[in-house]
Length: 86
Image (cartoon, rainbow, N blue to C red):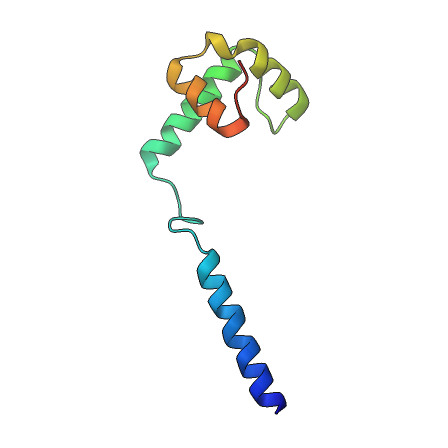
């Protein structure tokens, strides 16, 4: 009886894990996408905001202040990444 219960539980957990999987999740983004995101972080760093790994609170405040000075691609990128900051 215990064996049957363990088998049923095991199969149901595997089925749930398969249902939660999103295609492409966990895979490496294409190099073109990586290059674009790196250039946006470079662009915001040149505006004096640094990088979020250095001081996240300062970065977010600076991003809010300077986002209108970025290229439209980077405005969209940071908007998707951190929410609308305009």
